[in-house]
Length: 501
Image (tube, rainbow, N blue to C red; front, side, top):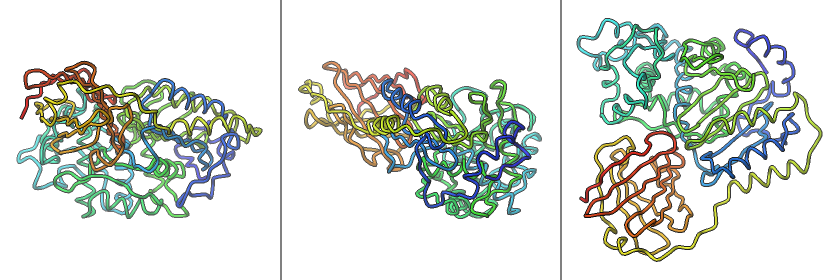
């Protein structure tokens, strides 16, 4: 393995030689696999983590652990499955930063270029002098000074998504601070970065990335949507298979080199995982160029984090990569448990019983529950069946819904989500009817049950797109009262009234 002595702490350098096993190996076609013990990890600890996620019904979708270039754990929790790509949310910012670096390496972008210089037609007519100073580097390290990312809930992102001109909206945001000063977690700023890539390369970010990053690494089937102007969502919404996303961590662990070719320059990797800004999250933390810096169980960590618990964590000292996807869960239940499984920097004695138990638990995690008995439908089901109820704009992104009941086993849901029409079956027996029903036609499912003659509880799970909603619906007098919760944090106890169309 080629470690960069420019950025690794001294403690990490001492252990670099222990990881020579993966020095010349690149998983372009497929990852190698081994037992945890063969890579110095304890299967019993990992099995306990998998079992704990199941027993606590945590909303974890997958956990993949890679050490010395070997996949030692690859778990998929029902209802997610490995044949579906998964939204990595704001981990997409780490990708956008890497792609920016490739464009910089090619001489297409300079980090000291000003933001407005890329958008002569969309820049404000009479911009604030401070805004004229915002650079590409300021966008990368979240220090643009725009009034964005300082209030809770990513309000500017939600407002931007409700417009048709996302870049113009962002460029028009007022300035709050001098560029290069305060850290503000501004997702719209990363959409501007994607648009800068497009302006500089004359291609959407996803297409430039496909040629210069994804294809060389053997990353496939990436789903990454554009805005209405054809610009890739630079801040989020990229979808990968978990194993494929692990390749991004592996690339950075190898200083940007892949099969003898420098995909991203070593200098860019160094800058990306060196502290460029202080988010104010305690000792050991920081933000580079799209990558978070942290300390897990005493180990230096760099990685990407996304809403709902999307994570790619790189632990250079242990030559490990951890990829987690989910829809909102306590992060403390996964990372620290994996860290506890690390016993040695060399193979452990084989433990066939522990490996068998781990495999059994991985298999159990993927299984669907048994169907439950379904009671007869209440009279209300017939009277409201097929009626569409429209919601006022609200933080949940749900704009309205209808339920159609043709029997007691299954219903049909029609939904308007951020202005897009979706439809899917609803299992009334406690089992998701899974299919390409979610946004971007990705994996989703729904269950539901009547909790009284006039109340229905809907579990709407956009599995590949993170969001999982619990919608408690009360039907009365031609309208509905809905209480909406979303597990990744979009909305909690949100109350809306839906009126029949």
